[in-house]
Image (cartoon, rainbow, N blue to C red; front, side, top):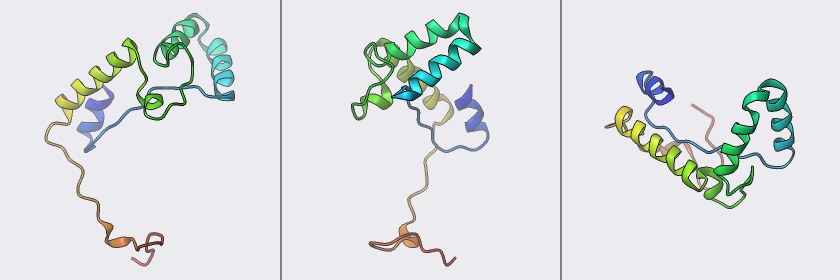
Length: 110
């Protein structure tokens, strides 16, 4: 539904990342989850862990964004299907590099 809505409002592209809870973020999130949604907390944490080989965090490049395992594969397939349905024939315009200079920042004089 998120991709359907964003496409209807003119979005040209979409990407996703799987939730990962590194360091103290995991402690804070678990505490908030237990206090706010105690009945669902275990399920949510188990699903996050299922995407990161049993851990709430995965620091390996690329895998940390997309996850691994069957839950991550299911998320990827659902995303791919929604992109094909709602973002067909949509493309980002080419990057206009004319406002940048070599070795410098964006030119601010518009």
